[in-house]
Image (tube, rainbow, N blue to C red):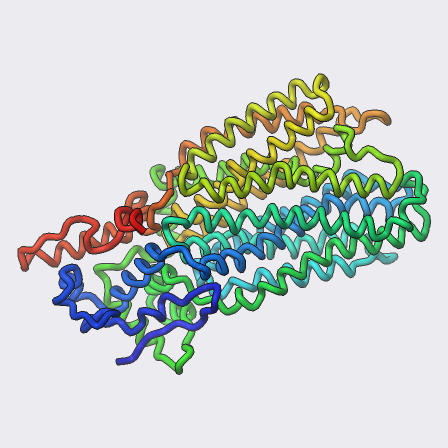
Length: 595
């Protein structure tokens, strides 16, 4: 019997499709005949690939947590480490650029904003394009490509220098847009690939751990900045103020920012092999690839190779095409709009996209301006060049270690117990309260009090909506639109980040004087409080996905997948007089809870 296999697979991402490629309706993976298994009797008329689908998905959903889960999290997480490093390293770098390329020693506000916003602009493009492509051509074909883009753009930034015809800011903006496209592609791909490979019981923890690498990336950026600052102390310490930074000082700082940026490519190179050799996710193989347009177009979703020899993938397509009774709807733009223009389905996308948008207005409004806020509360306000750079790096380390990283990992350990929706709701409520306190009591609070409140904001961002807005879109949408929907949700968030940096952030300098560079900072905090309050209402639109199989969620929310299949299978019992209770032929919530 010919075995239809897909290529790919490594120690991090197991190829579950090939594990069950030998299963036929003559016998199952244990050599048992259909007659010996009552629930298989009802499948006797179904094509072979559908039975492989059930066994493969059940294997994934009910698998005990093991080392290959850990390896999968690490491989996907390294991408997020790189993403966060590249995004948030710019906090330290823009200050260094001011010392090197401007006589005043300070980068102009518009240049600072352009460099930071450019990454978010590219990220929006990457999230939409890669999210869509992963649903069209497959997760496997796109995974790794985004990391290649990040590596090239990161190295290009670190080697960039201005000339008579090109300003450094323009060159950095260009390469950061390109880098942002790669970073954007990593959001939907890492989320859905982890989701579709994860065991159901710990899916939230696995996805949360991938996202938590963002905190480690922020930590690494601040740590590398601190290391290079100390390493070049002899050249920067003599400069009593930024404008006094001489040639030796500028040369040292010029080397520093290039090292900080360039280091971001190192972890990406390490993870590249594993990403390029992953297998296609079983859910895409079974639920999407067989449902796309009949003909040569869907052949591009398969790879005609296997570890033990060549296989006839065309024959596999022909076989799967015969399973009309068990097919979920085909992916198409008509079907997409038909699904999401209905309020009962569209509200879920509105909830995920709206929550991410509202969150990122405040999250990136603060996160990309940590250095400015630290200076405003008196922590990094030093004249000496070395002291300024040192305090900036240490201040960012304090914020990340005290607030961000604990918040990420508390989410990892509790998200499969408390649930996604309660954590997101709690986060938005507490963040609203914290920003109200900071905004309306800004001038009456001490620097230490402001620092403490700011750390609490960082904690409840990450033990709250910053983590859950990443998790839920990777779980609550049908497989054929999961990546596209996640990309739309994530892109909405980056639009919020752009608005925060371009429209809201600059408000802090309104009425600026020589002694007060950010007189409107308290009002910006009040605006952030309003966005957090709005997030409470968008959270009401999302479903709870805790410890539910992806098929179970699809059946409940959209009436597809397992629900359709059980209906079709029950119809086959009309002539036999045997009945099947819902849930017996597939696997759902009850099967997973015991794993």
